Image (tube, rainbow, N blue to C red; front, side, top):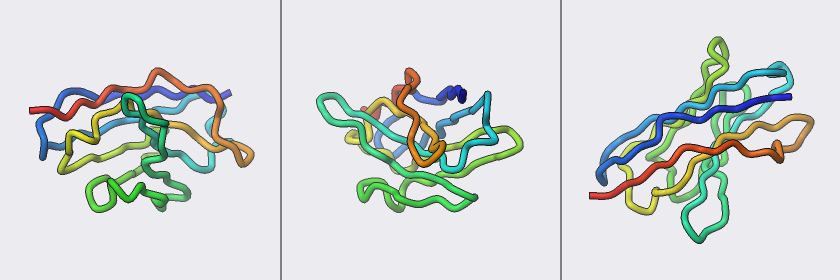
Length: 117
């Protein structure tokens, strides 16, 4: 069992920055890839980006060049640094992990990010 806890969301003005954190606990040795997802109102959940073996990848086209993902294995924590935020980045952000080739099916509550003037 792996438990995930997202934090760091909030209200930010357009053009601002925010850093989200995702801390994993439990059977963390089984984790290979970690990823960030988001779901905006009325839209499907989408993959924002992922990190595996210290290399981030699979960034959504809409966030390339603005968002970065890093991981501190000593703290069992993954970060999503979001810069140049836009109103369309408003969503609930979730983290998830791949174990045995599959993303976990149980999602946490996520953390709300609202970009508004």
